[in-house]
Image (cartoon, rainbow, N blue to C red; front, side, top):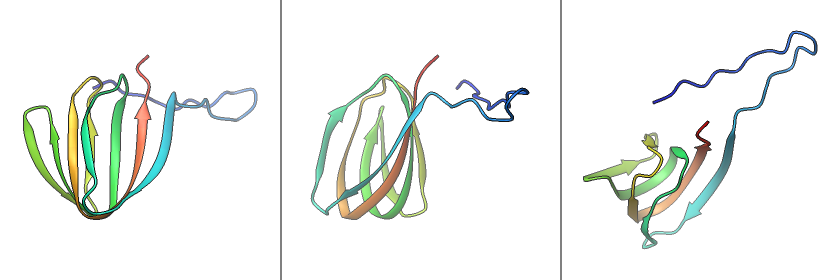
Length: 94
């Protein structure tokens, strides 16, 4: 994993932006997430609900309060067991 840092610009006192995209999803129980992958690392924050997920060669049961990291290029899929709300961050690779 690579470390990303924010640095203050001395002249303006502002921060440089991270190369990332964010979003929030609501998925009803029974939703099937087909296998997919993407070129960004994904960090997801499970806010509520539950999800059975497969990432790489591992199965996971995720619930509200869990945080996940899916490395760029890793195939992942899932099935929503209880109505699910999550926030995600897609971190672009430098």
